[in-house]
Image 1 (cartoon, rainbow, N blue to C red):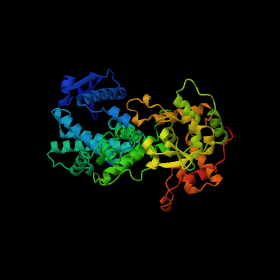
Image 2 (image 1 turned 90 degrees about the vertical axis):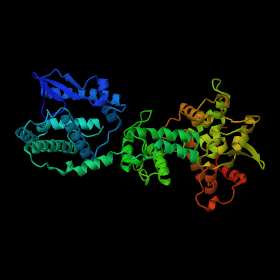
Image 3 (image 1 turned 90 degrees about the horizontal axis):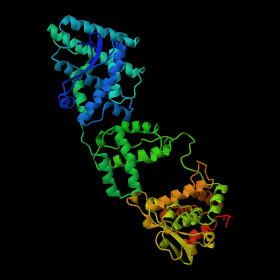
Amino acid sequence: MKKVRGSDYLSIRSGIFYFRRAVPPDARSLFGKGEVVTSLKTKDLAEARHLLIAELRGFEAKLARCRGVRAPAERAQKSGYTPSMADIEMVVRQWLVERDERMDARNSRDHAANADEAERALSLHSSALENVATNPASALDASWVAENLVEKNGWSLAGDSVLFRRMTQMILRGQIESNERQRQELAGEPVRILDERFGADKYRMDRDRASPKAGPSLTDLLERYIRERKPKPPTRKAYRLHLQPFIDFVQHDDAARISTKDIIRWKDELQTRKSKKGKPFSPNTINGNYLRVLRIVLGFAAENLLIPSNPASGVKMRAAKGATQEGRSLTDNEAITILRATLGDPNPRKTREQNRAERWVPWLCAYTGSRVNEITQARAQDVREINGIWTIHITPDAGTVKNDRERTVAIHPHVLEQGFIEAIRGLEGPLFYDVSRKRAGSDANPQYKKVGERLAKWARSLGVDDPKVQPNHGWRHRFKTLARRSGLDPEIRDYIQGHKPRTEGEAYGEIDVEVTLREIKKLPRYGVA
């Protein structure tokens, strides 16, 4: 069987092409032999090269299973990174070393037998190199090697790109380097380097670059951050959920090996992905979820001197000019539609708590501008009378409150007139969900959040179906709009909604419930009850 010159895995016997690959010593127990030889059942060289790719994939997958690592084809599906020229040079040098080692393992039978044969091989590759820019067909073997290396490393590199052509040229230069070294050895001449990219210094730099840095684990850093900062269960769940896809993308968990370039590649990758609903990720999702958790984890590592700096700092997804990042206010018609529906008869197929939520949560959101989950988590003891004024106490003790800023807000007289206090009198614990229905592991997805999700779905069923408005959060936007229109004091308006004080001075002193009632009463009543 004769090896096809210039192709490491292709041989020919009696006019038939064969796939031929030496099995590494550590995998011979799985393969049951030291060399794999498979007939490609064709006499056509072009067809043989295509069939060879499938054989090589199968070989690599089996070898990967033996070694317990991810196969090249699997890595290709996980990545899509466009390599730099430095990446290409390192991979080509590694390929050349492995190629020469395989030749040596075959007792040099694939090396040139004499200086003249080495000279002819050198001339062949040199001619291909000269023509590759204008006639790629003259370097088919080098192109095939390039395609294999692109696939093996999971790169995104088109065959007609400048980088691919440069890669093919470097493969040919590597072959020339190897041929020239053979010729020099056979002729008894001193061995010298033709191309400095194949010099000893470059190989030493490759070893340094590839060596593991043994930095802190990204997952361990996140858990340390959670133990120290103690975020709420839903936040912990979200952080873990959005960190793991990045680890899968870069295919390692070493914080010290993460570069800003990796973060940028991840940002670009996220723009090609879609949500469970099949929609592309919004800039808000990319920035506020996926990139945010990287900034937090790597920032925590930098603060604790575990890595030199935070590579995720400053990397963000820029929204298109004029793009809407958040939903708009509910319109007058949408607000009236929802509030009118709250006055209907309870649905016998729903729980008492869910019917109670549909009856009162929209009204409380409408007149306080609170986040829906701040209301759905409310307990009976959070509704109390202070100085003759009925109030609702919004506190992290009941669930989650953004920025952990608790506040006590007066309930609008229009809500009281509808019988809200009478409807909840005698109740204990949460008003809008039943704690006995809690499922195991629900801390990260609490019941009050589910109540809010069901309310949004219910509102959609009423015809509030504009994708630009969020049925629950739209109340928060609407409150702000009406508060401006009605002349509410900006400082009190922000307090009622739980926004941070705009100035240091506004953070001083207390805001009494009498003040919140005075401002809330300025809001116009909804004429449906």
